Image (cartoon, one colour):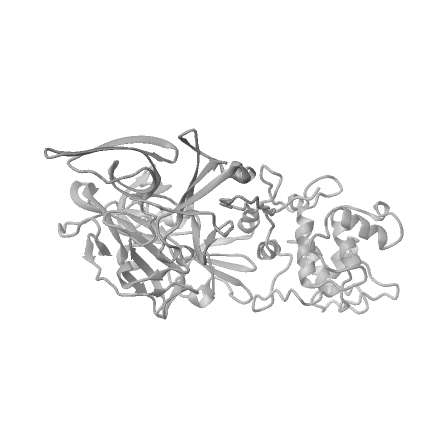
Length: 616
């Protein structure tokens, strides 16, 4: 039975119109398939990392692929001490692979004693090779060669996505599909083939792609004098902070992992006061820095943060975090020498300890930094308050907080640029109001039109690319979106008051105001909630009878609106609202009249926030 290596979940928010829509099954992309065979070491790129998927595969190359896809993968190399065929001397680059593949019966030579290593592999030769890996023998093939082999190959599903036909040469693309299919296919004995190579399966009997990567990954390593001092970059694909990148983009103090085909680099550092260690400073497994706890990943980091290392409770230190947000390395903040930027979301007081263990109380600020996480720092400056955009510098024993100057920037967000200014692929974006901040991503802004008043701050790297961007309440994602179901307002010469009932995520809440009214009306609305109190209400606009509906949004009269990721769907029936599942809406869309509600136009950062379905 065919098993998929990776189940790609289609996170589809399909808020349908009156016409039922078809839903396609999730398919594994070519990029994922390529990464699987790369990570498994079955197929790798050339010296530049290019897979050359349209080139044909030779019999020598196929022998190497078969060995790499077998339990011999870590035991055999191309080196051989004897010549396996008259046209394959022991000096041939694939002599060892060819010798192993033929001796195991996966491939065969010709009657004249040759192997013909430079001939291209035909479909039937390739199919026979992987069938042999699955444990099938000549007795399992009915009919004469190659009809029995082709029939079994097709019945097992090994032919999925392969375009080659009997007698034609296999391209590297077809070979990529063949080995991906092989990994997912059960052996003759009923075991998923990938499992025979040591890869574990999940609860659905599917091998997790991440397990393949993890099993072949080396690291973490901290870059000191260039990534090439850690691993050769020739022929390797490079990712930095999750985005396709180049080896030249990797910087000092990046945390690096690698395997035979790929390098992953992470630039993620946390700087602040070393507050505590758990279970103890003599043998720490986690530490608290700047108000947040981090698990330690490496023995070097554990040593540095222990009583045997040079970092002590009360010091200002920097943690270098790896791919799982765990501590790969630790050092003094002076050594790292970098600032932290963000928006102040709260002020308060905190208890700290100096280097000799004495406690003291300090004024603190809590910021949402550009990575979207919250950190707390001591700050004696009373001029720093909530809503300020600040930069925090670090000395050996104190923090230096300063307010960042506003920046002017405007233009359409498109192709990783804002107007004429280029954005880095891993640009960090915050949307902030007076006291709150939320991290957003480039895709959230793509197509939006930013005015200078929408941008509070931005920073650039050495190449002039925008790396950090702070917006002024642009997306509207800092608010809650619900339905006002009850309004009672009192206004006379003596007093103002109001009572409001609203639904938020299906939960009903009633609040009262004294000394003011909110001017609310019934229906979907944007809700401003501060410290648990409803402080402002703004009615949403509605879209009825759109011209088209897709998974991402709707269009009407030439205008388009996109769905919010957290868009809520309600059924309104018998004067009552109840949450409606997307599945039920999808399956019964023709039974409902559907209205969509948005806060503002898409190019202004708006989204469709609420959908209401009414029985027809």
